[in-house]
Length: 304
Image (cartoon, rainbow, N blue to C red; front, side):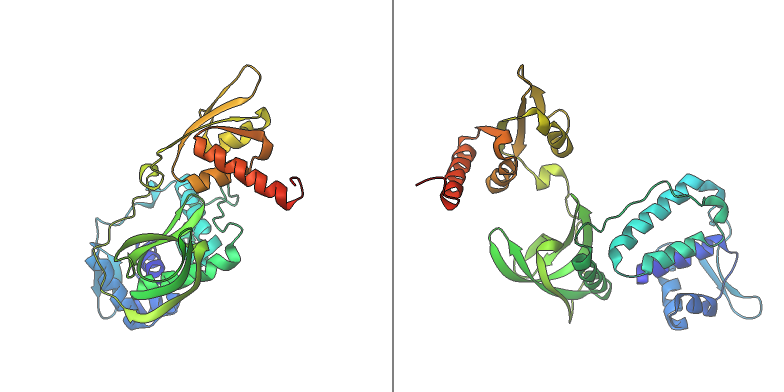
């Protein structure tokens, strides 16, 4: 992809005194014209690249700009490579693996044989996520609309969006873009998207804002929750809400309190604890759980 190629070209220019367009074209398996456009894009981004024609000519970064590689420590390089490997775990291609090789070229003194940090962002849904991510990445680069069927709590709908960002947040993947149906920016969860396809319809890039991913924006709260959990559920409360979300009672049970955003999700979450949780507030959640329990008993023959 173009962004990977630009980063790769910049990495080579930072490490080598000089290179040529034919060498870069062969290395990245693209045409010489594509490399020339990439160099123009890097110049527009403020990178002072110098080109010289004829014998002894080539492409290089102007003196005084080249980054001293000693600034990057071994730990720095390990963090960079760990990040690239994490992207490779979901990319469905070899883009990032190839980019890692380009960065490693000439930098072996910074990289140890043993990795101390491994990050896998693929989740259990790698088989279905990778093709979606690849389609969306292509559409973002080509400035093409994408279309898909979306499953939300409010129902199913067909959507067309101008994709701007792929987002990994809250252990899930999302796409942020301008939705033509809603006439506004929206965040869509990839696992709820089906039949994702890049169209041939181009769009003019908007001055798209970065998505607001703060907890206050996405999880505004509003529902005050109080519940009592058995002591053996402490690990799960700590994992999901942190060690300060509860106080221990005299009998060892845990008095939990927090703000929640959505009643349906709250009830679903509480019911996963079964008899190990008792809801105190809100009363609405308590009533819904009681009705659900009665309906379940009817299904399994517990009630006449």
